[in-house]
Amino acid sequence: MKKIKIGFVTFPIGEANVVPLLNIIDICLEITNDIYIITGNSGQKINRKLSEEHFKILNHISGSNIIARIFNYIKTQIKVTIAMLTFSNKVDIWIFPIGGNSLLLSALTLKIQRKPYLFLLTSSSHLMFQYQKDRLNHIPVFFERLCSLLSKNIILYSPNLIEEWNLAPYRHKILIAHHHFLDFTKFTIITPYSDRPPLIGYIGRLSAEKGVQHFAEALSAILSKHQDLRVLIGGDGSLKDAIEASLQEEGIADHVNLPGWISHDDLPKYLNQLRLLVLPSYTEGLPNIMLEAMACGTPVLATPVGAIPDVIQDEVTGFIMENNTPECIAQNVMRALNHPDLEGIAERGRQYVAREFTFEKAVERWQHILTKIKCY
Image 1 (cartoon, rainbow, N blue to C red):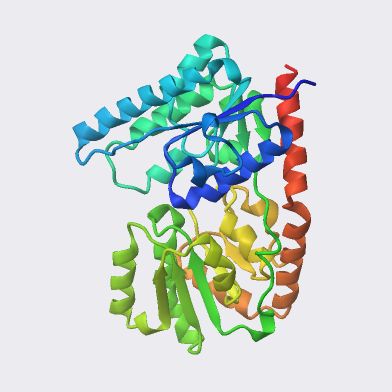
Image 2: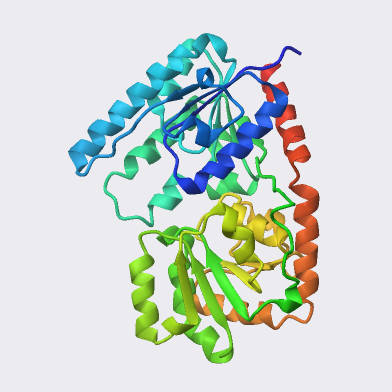
């Protein structure tokens, strides 16, 4: 089969999403060297393997009020679509990954041109935005639904997400694949589990959909039972000030370290200090931090959302809690820390990700999907 030519539209993305985007680009570079990218980020930051002629780098300015935000949002849609048209004759299939979920004008243009595009859904805008107080959030949610309708195929991490994200009407065009793979020379056991301090933690965005506020609320009950325990809450976001205030009010601030945003390069060091990582999310796709923790021999306690149940089997490769209420979190943290085979669970989790999340497996999966789509 002739090598497929792939275009990516992702505009813009934050620091937390650069690694997942790099993963999918690196996977596709194993399949073809004909890749073109439209981005709001630096080309060198996105991928160093491609020359400048493969990029269209556009600037986006976010408005400070509603009218300015709407105007700049429309302007971004137009700029991205014009940039996409310059690559039109070079691309066989377009992929809308992280950051491209609401580019409706681009999706409509491709539909008119009869160019196929894949909609890579890594999260549910509807579920995320319902926990954020922003009057404009319904616009990207509506656009995302229309883009799903116009797409040739939708790529999800897990079949679980079809019902969870209300995607049943598109079931006929949903394909299952993920672009997660780990650098096991980096994410590995540095500190043996038995040598780690009594430290539990959360690492991720400090926002409502992540449930981190409930983890903070559960800490008083947890620390009353484990007085020698210390806590790490790593990350940044809209809830940072509220979490700091609640820890002060409860009188437990001295037990909790809030280092702010943790760079990806520093993650292995932090994960190798933890005895348990807690992910109390309301909604997830397939969280990288879960896989990275497991690769470092750190057991994970998480809610059964997204693709998490595909990876974590309770008391086998990690721990699942029924919900993310503070009471449930506290009970399950105790259950995990007191489990007689905690080290065995951590090791089985490490073995699972070492077997299932290799670069080779990811390439094989995407090779199959892209070949199938190309042959339609």
